[in-house]
Length: 357
Image (cartoon, rainbow, N blue to C red; front, side, top):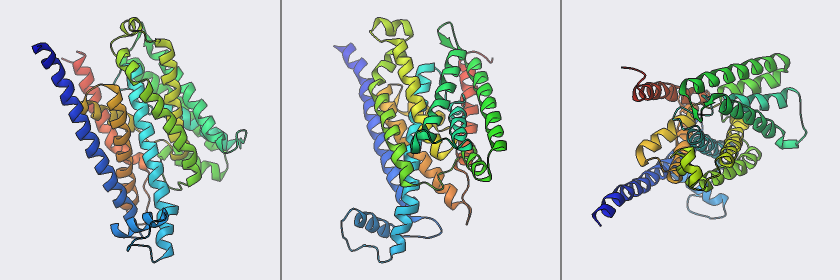
């Protein structure tokens, strides 16, 4: 009986910690959204924001908008940008959780190992060559193909003897990023002025120009990817025990790998196709959440999705307001945060593995 109490206590503590962290993240996300909608060159009060949003869904209050332009700023500019940022943050964070799970490595991330570059290269190719095979889905489809090729290349090249080497993973990522960069440069050379601007936009990463039709494409892809991640969460917990153990426990390891890899490609392409390359979200957020709530994948996926949305919302708020009359690239801001974090994580991983004295 004593053993049951001892073993169940950490689980209860982790469950409570997960609830508290999730509530804290949701509260922070709501506050950030209100501040983001109110901030900018055209300042609005929180009361005006609430009145505009309620009026937009047919609820009249004392805070109803008195100026048509107020509602236009919110519904046509700031809200689409905010919603797209939330979707992109959730997609990149969940893709990071899945990549780290399937590679068994905390350094795995769509940007670090080149998946984002592959997806961006595919999207850039569709615009440079004017492809319209799938209509409005052409660019996301090409991004999906590019991301899928990149993630399969990284996976098969970096694995050896049933495990993924850190050094091989990073070197493979450098090679994939180099190939993607060369391809982007070539497409920039071939493209028109308009396509060149869009390619540069992808390389820097931005939510500027977010439109509701874009969100109509990103939302179902992100939703599908997150749902699949939640479905396979328990199998990922078993996979973390080792491939042989997972097989003995009934996990179809190869099928799980394929599902996860394709899901990562879906999530990354959804983000990259309309927001460009926004680095380190999938590296920083899952690792922070793992430190706070533990390694169980179901709560980790949920908290990472919310945490990624929060980080992008904060980064976009800074991008819009830090410099007057300017819109900084959001990818630059996330890299300023993620770069030092990645170096710290790399040093910490090497020391734990005995690479340094």
